[in-house]
Image (cartoon, rainbow, N blue to C red):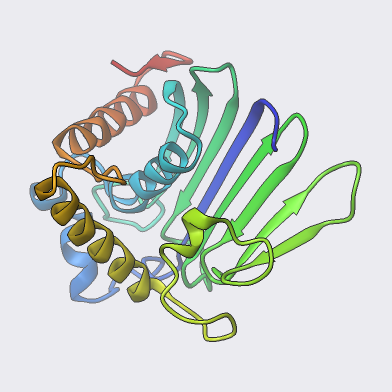
Length: 223
């Protein structure tokens, strides 16, 4: 449908850490003794990277990163921009910020192929936008016309009754339970779930970001 993937962009912008005193939830995120080597990118940049991998199946091979800390006295990054190169030759960008004043939970995915493009916003998760150069923009609604069988399997409510962040977890738990019964019956599981290797890959991603941002190399390969 999309053709060969050429460009993948993700924005994850929040504003709640723009204040030096953002509350208890902010304390551990900006403390390297607790959070480790990265703040913003470790907190939400990893979500952006995982979303790209989950939706496209592509692997990031090289990154060029600029991490920044805007709040005075903060020891870890609260903003970051990453240029991406993928194993199929595609390019991409991750823009992650927790000091984007006024933003709530602005998580956006855009995927551009040679034939068409997809766009999704977490703040309006019921809509999947499809664009091309040959037809008017289309908007697919969750649970309505055009919904594929894979999507129908994880829909919990009829169209027009909005499903949100928490309902998404119920779909994961139900699929996991179904696969437990399937394995017991000698069948193969229908879904793939995050495992230890996924966590290791995220740590490698963060290590490469920090290394590149602190160093002089233009590009850093992911090991």
